[in-house]
Length: 375
Ligand code: SAH
Ligand code: SF4
Image (cartoon, rainbow, N blue to C red; front, side, top):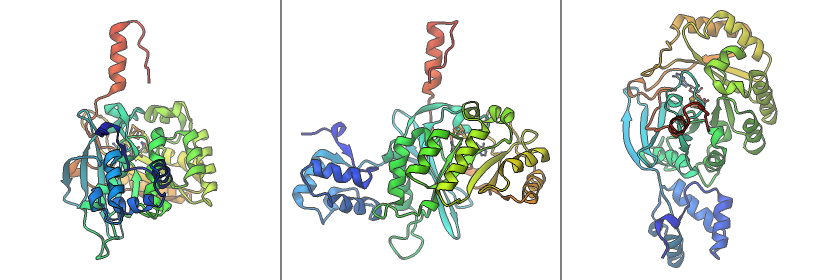
């Protein structure tokens, strides 16, 4: 008899993979569609309740497969209606997802990694370091939980709370391309959640090769964490800039936009007092983006313990925004939600023990003179 560890998890598996699996089992591929409807549309994960599958097929699924969801460790609700979940990620680790209700939509902000290795100077996730990538099941499982536990938007059972998904939780989604792509497939598939590609946003700090790949393979909305209008400053704030500097990042962005009929790319820009919020910065930013399919989303910095940056004043943010608009750019300022439950942008910390730093310190003990980072 198969033991749990040998069983393949059907959650997070795109239709084509499920069909191949059923074929391997000597079963008809159309069962993939039935299983997907049960898991995502009806929220059923118990094979015995899947009444349109034969008894013998259900037994086979029991023996060879499982539907394993991430476990919710805790749930917090903000006074503004924002909901945050902490999901178990094994070995004492945890990641977070945040639901932001608005009258016309419900946005779920999901995590893609346990921590993040990219170490942006102003980010609570980055400050914790990196532990591991989430699986596709752990990514899509966040959406499953939100949709199963939040009230529907109407009396229609298929009118799920989550209408938009943003990969803006913990982690760099394009550094976990292998799991993020199948998860997106399930979000947009009619047999999954049927969310339009336009309403799924991948936010990246700027991994150029993966932006090109995403444009070819998937074409969802793209948000880019720019945060600085010149390389000297961006090198400091977003260290991956040293590998993929602004011009090569922007070139990749315009290639991406072209593949999507020039639909706009959002550039995120965290407002840090006295660092990147001067009028000259607004002018430099405008010079980079004017005339391009770009919009700018200013994010007031959200503080967290152990970090010294300060949020720009409301006046400064307003002036910065109007300067961008004067240059003809579309610019908005993100409303901060869920601050009272530490659910705002960049505050998601979960529970991460940093494997990168552990490896670094092991190296230090072994050989005090050569402190080489092995990522
Ligand atoms: N790794 C991806 C997605 C996760 S972060 C990325 O960097 O784009 C989602 C957004 O929150 C990014 O734009 C990120 O730069 C921003 N962010 C990080 N820390 C923040 C903070 N303390 N305050 C406000 N925004 C922050
Ligand atoms: Fe990672 Fe994004 Fe945080 Fe940078 S801002 S450390 S890329 S999660």
